[in-house]
Each structure stands twice: as structure tokens, then as C-alpha cells.
Length: 477
Image (tube, rainbow, N blue to C red; front, side, top):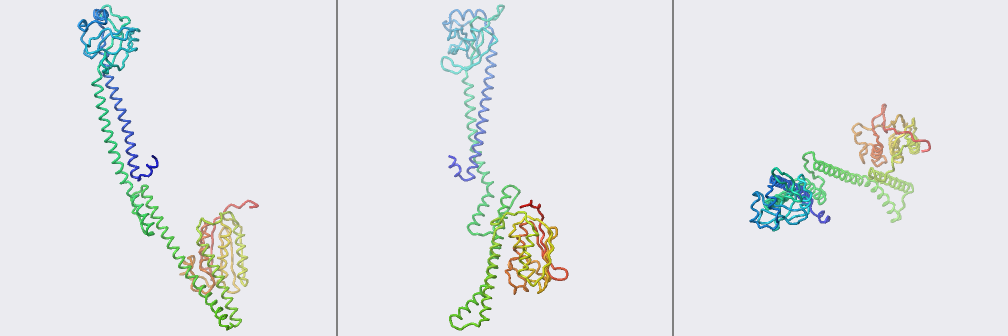
């Protein structure tokens, strides 16, 4: 049953749930209403029965008790009876002694006999019973009392006053039928209203579903859903629009990355293929290449292979998601990482002099990625420094500066230095992939810092990396 319910469309389930909820509420209210009306009607009948209870004349009692089997004609001495039934019952007897109702008598039950035997006029008992013909009757049983100077309770005798319930039961039956009809109409109306509300309320969801299906079918990420209001549907629409915009931007970046990578890979591959073809033609024709030219060709091949390997490594670094395949951030000594990167830079620029002043500073970062970023920054300084130049490195209060004394970067090129594959026209002849500073910026941002490049006073370029400090790790960490 639950599986079938879940298989229904959402709007059908909402309509069904509304109808069930209304049905339960209407049933509870209708039942309570019926019992309240029933109680009110019975209270009125009980009040009328109480009003009919009055002391009997002594001669009436005597005549009634002479013999319970008297004919109706012999009972004309009793007072007229406005209600349906009036009879006496003796304790220990299951038949009434006398009744003024020739149409039938009320069936005596044990509670009536108990009232007769107790002979307590303060005890009133109400019950539902039947007469000898099976008709429903509301019955009041009370001890019989004699009126006049000799007022008193008649021993072992009770007075039973009855009221027929035919009209009352008819009224209650009519009320039950009316409540049932009204409840049915209410449930059907609630179901239709629930279906209408579900359709109206789910229209934005239908639009969202259509948009998602359109995107899945056509891969068109330019689809946007109109946002109306500030409710949950509006929030969902905004989230969908943001998601499609992010996906479109990501796809554009991927396409640009592929295009740029293809462009950058084409140059070393073309050079590599040309050199290899020259070597292959020499072997095929038997015309030997002069040793000096052959050595130059082999050196060029090795350089192009090194450049390709570096470019592929940089592409792999940039293709990794920020939160995937990365080591956990931990507290590391920035001054020690800078010192290690500085030693590697000295090997790449042995003709340069390096001046370093590194104060202790601890940061939260991935050690390997941070060292790679610092090596890239120092490599740029080495690459653009003039022969015999000086590279100045300083670390003070979380601010790492690297300054070279080269030609510097033109102001109009500074906004592009962190873009992927961007290379200054003056640097295109130098080795590099154009991805180094992009990797540096990404690594620094992941560590919560920032990087900037600008002209240095007196010439050259000054790179500044700022990283927030972290608690000093305990000894032995």
C-alpha cells in the first residue's frame, strides 16, 4: 500500500493527504456533534420524565396493588398520563403490577426491582429500555410515594415512567444522515481543493523540472528560471540559476583551458617533430649531420621534452579540484619552506646572488603545494634577473617578499599575470608554460592568503605573499 502511494504523482499524494486529513477531522467533528445533540435530547426527555413524577393517591395505590392481572377497564382510577408509559412494579417481580397504557408495558429489569426493594425516594435511575412490543423507551424508575396526610413511601414498590424514543431516534438518524452527506461533500470538496492547491503550488516546481529536463536533454546551460517572491520555491529557483551559471562558467573555463593547452602544446610538439624528422631523414638518406648540429638538435629535443613534461605537470596541478586529492592543511614553518625553495632557486641561478632575511612564521597550508608555489615565484625572479643580479627575499610578520632587479613588468600587463597561459610578449622567448603564477595564486588562496605583483623601487619586480599566522606547533611535531 505504501509503495503504491509513493508511486502516485506528488500532486495526487498531496490531494489524497488533504482529503484524508479533512475526512478524519470531519468525522471527529460529526461524531462529537451527534453525541452532543443526543445528550441534549436525552436531557430534555429526562427533564420531562422528572416532571411527571408525582405522589399517587392512596386509592390508586390500593387499586393497583389489589391484583396485577386486572383488566384495563378496571384501571380507570389512575390519573391521566401525558407521557407514553406509567406503571408500578413490585420488588422481586419481573412484571409490572399495573399500567395505564393499554398499548403495552415497559419490560422490567433488575435495576427497577432494586429501586422497588430499596424504597428510597431520593434515588433516580434513568435507562434505555423496550416495551413488550420491542419499541425503544426512555425510562425513569423511582420509589412510589403516596400523597395526602399519610404521605410516605410505598414499601417494595417503584413507579416506572416511560417516554417513547421513536421520534428522538428518528431525529438522531436524520442528523446522522445529514452529517454523513455533509462530511462526504466536505471530503470530496477538500480533495478537489487539495488537488487545485497542489497544482497551483507545484507550478514553479514543474517549471524547474522542465528546465532541468531541458538542460539534461540539450546541455543548454543558459536556461534561467524567473524568481518570484522569497519562499522556498524562489530559493530553489535561485539555487538552480546559480548552479547553471556556475556550470556554464566551469564549462567555459574548461573549453578555454583546453584551447590554451592545445595552443601551448602545439609549439614544443611542432619543434620536437621537426627535430626528430631531421634526425630520421639523416638516418634514412645516409647523409650525416655535422656533430655540432646533431648535438644542438639533441639538446633542442631534450629541452622541448622537458618543457612538455613541465607543461603537463602544471596542467595536472590546475585540473585538480580544490578539495580532492590534496593533503590536509597543517601547521608548517613558512620560513623553513622558504629556505628550502631558496636552495632550489640557487641551483637554477648559480650566477645570481641571493639575499635572504627570514623571520620565523607559522601558517596552515599543504607543505608540498606551498613549497612548489614559492619555487615558482623564485624561478620567475631568477628568469628575469640580469646576469650577476641579486634576488632579495624577506619574511616579516607573515609577509614574504621576493624582489628581482630585472626589466620589470609593464603596468598594462600587471592585471594579466595570474591568468592561465598568459605570458608577457617580452618573455615568450624564455622557457615556461604561463601557468606558474596561476598555480601560485591558487595555492596561496587555499591557505587563506593573497599574492600581488608590482614594480619595485629602483627597477625590477616585487612579489608579495601574505599568509595568516597559525599557532606554533608543539615540539616534536
